[in-house]
Amino acid sequence: MTDTELVLTGGERLRVEGDAKRVESAIVSAARGSILELAWLTESGTRRRVGINPDRVLMIRALDDVEGQSHADLVTVPASGLAGDDLDAGRSGGRGDLDGTEPGED
Image (cartoon, rainbow, N blue to C red):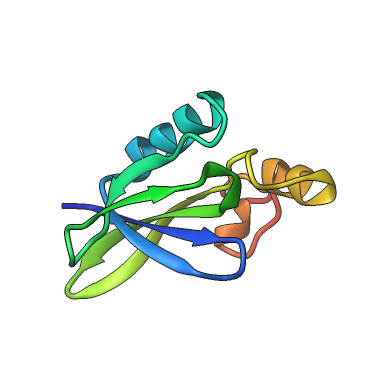
C-alpha cells in the first residue's frame, strides 16, 4: 500500500495510509466542510485513526516504497494552512522544484 507523508505547522510529520490524491481529497473535503471538521485518516504502522485539522497541513508528499526506502513521488501544497506569499509560491512551483529546475525549464 502507498503511504503519504503530511507536514503540519510546527514541523510535525505524520505518515498515513493511502495515496496522495485520496489523502488530499480527505483534507480538502474537511476544509470545505463544517467549522472544525477533521480529515480522518489511518496512521501508517500503528493503523490508528487520526483526525487532522486541515488548516494545519502545509505539505502532502506521496511516498513510494522502493526496496525499503521511501521515495518522494509528488508534492502538493493545499491552499488551507497557507497564506500570502507562501500560497503564491506553492501554486507556482508545480513539480519543477522537485528536480531542482524552475517551472518551464527542461
